[in-house]
Image (cartoon, rainbow, N blue to C red; front, side, top):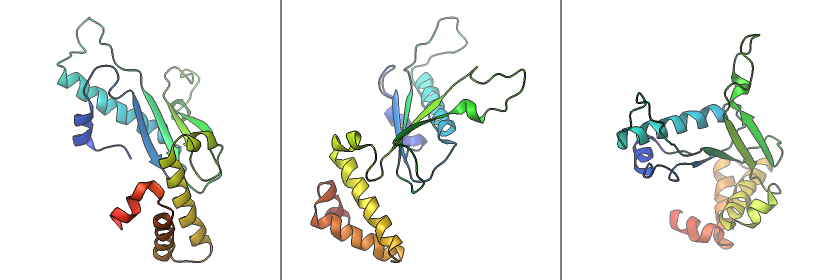
Length: 171
């Protein structure tokens, strides 16, 4: 999940690279991901402008970082490994308001087990997390109540040292 305002302020450090990429994890299929990303970056840009005492009313162009918003999706709805959600799809279209006059895109990567293999192959933590979530989901599907499903998955994660001891530390 993206950070709240207090930690957003801590993240805005330099004009170019400090917040050009934002990620969030999403477990439900949500057509508003692009809108959320747009609002997150809006907050970051406002903080950046204030911190650096930049005035948008001056004639000099203010350079800002190029945003990229990536959503790691691990919900139960079937989706492709990667897809895009565009903010313009939410615009109220009319004959005088063509789609695409303004655009914002959320790049969504399905991180469920057996999806986005290349991404998971190159990121052990993401692979381990996907295995854990998949185990919880399979336990629930077999009829376990959520508490038991999670406990059994945590036990498996500890046995297999998923996430480098995270589950042992936070048990």
